[in-house]
Structures are given as structure tokens and as C-alpha cells.
Image (cartoon, rainbow, N blue to C red; front, side, top):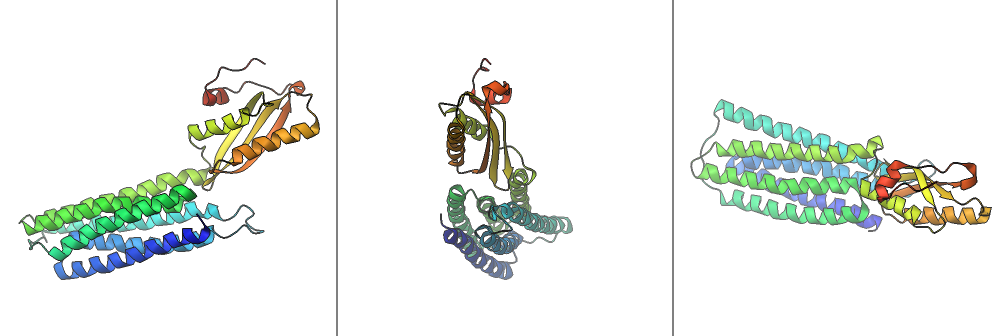
Length: 308
């Protein structure tokens, strides 16, 4: 996906969320429904983070420069955490309003508003479309910011359904369902914030990637016919991408040119993984006595330790 296409995703999300907040705000003003009001607040928060997403995607898709030789993708986890802060704030505000409404007894039955029902059903449909759209883009670009956006849209489908329950409940003489539904909406909002934080903390603290990806990295190194083994394999997140360093074991009778070619082939093979950014390979000739058993490598590739 091109950089322009990635930015277009952010623009589409922003435009849809602006339309939704206007529609929900008008229905809230005309019906007074707490459930619809909470959805309007949710959409207002969506507009805020959509602006941040659009600006963040613009920055992260800038080409490498002297100050950022690896590009600007590492900004994305910070953008995602900023989104999470806004999501938490919106969820807390909705939960506070729902709770105070129940405790104060300020709930009243109202007729079912076809407009409110229509806007909530339309919201669920729009959010499902945005979820699929953003997730496809995130899968192609491995963008944590787009993944965070997709998760928020997915949960918005459930919160819209909860708000619809509140509207219908109020219309059939159970007005307490309205603030209860608003409370459910707030839980969905807060859970979205939790998911975003959980997904992005690993990018910021340099955690190891999943075992299946680490195993694939090791397998690609061992697939080279001149590589007898590997050890001291370190793979960790630097932003949303992975840096890899490892030692490969080769026979010591290789010429310098041959050793260089082996290293280059291994580096290129591992770099073909979409998640990987940089790869650093150290070649250990057998005669230096640096070959060693690495149990973590053996566990990843499911092999018995080689005889040294």
C-alpha cells in the first residue's frame, strides 16, 4: 500500500466520524436519550483521535532523513497511546454520566424514536465497514495506528448495539435501560483503550516478537546450506518493526569472500519478512571455538541440540 493510500485511510475515517457525530448529536438533542448521547460523545472522541491519526500517518510516512535514518514509523506507537488516552477519557465521561443519572433517578420513559433507531443501526453498519477497511490496511502495512483504529471501530459496533437496546427499552416503558446501556457503552470504550495500550506497549519497551516469528527467523538462517548452526539470536521490537541480531556457525575453511556471501544471503532472507527492519549477522568459524548449544534456538526450531 502506498504512503498516499495510507493517508487516505486516515482521511476516510475522519470524514465518516464527523458525519456520525453530527447525526448522533442531532438525535441526542431532539430525543434526550442518554444512550444516544453517550454514542455522540464516543463519536466526538473518534473525531479527535482521527485528527491525530491523520497527522500521525502523515509523519510516519515521511521518507528517512539525516535525523531519522530508519524512517519515522517508530512514531506510530506514541500516536496509538495518545489515542488510548482520549478513548479512556471518553469512556470515563460516559460512565460518570450514566452512573449519576441512575443514582439521581433522572430517567424518564420516552417513545421509541425511529430517527434514533436509524442512526444507531447506521452507525453499526458504518463502523463495520470502517473496521474491515482499516484492518485490511493494517494487515498490509503492519501499522499499529491503523490497527488501533480498526479495534476502536470494531468495539463501536457493540456499543452502538448497546445504545440501541437503551433506546428501545426506554420506548417500551423501561427507561432505566437507557443509562444502563450508556454504562455498557462506556465499558466498551474503556476496553478499547485497554486493547490499544496492550498492543503498543510491546513496541515501546522492546519486547520480543511472537515465538512463531522468531522461529521463522531462525529457520531462514539455518536454511542456508553453509550454515551449521545459530546462537545468541536476539529479535526485539524497535517501534512497530523488528531488529534482529544473531551469530551463525560456518566451517572455518571458507574464504573471506565466501563468508561475506553467506552473511549477505542470510541477512537478505530474514529481511524479506515484512515485520523485520534491520538484521545484523556475525559469522563464527568453527576453529575459533565459538560454536555453542543454544537451547532457545533448539526450542524454536524443534530440533535436538547438534553435536559440537
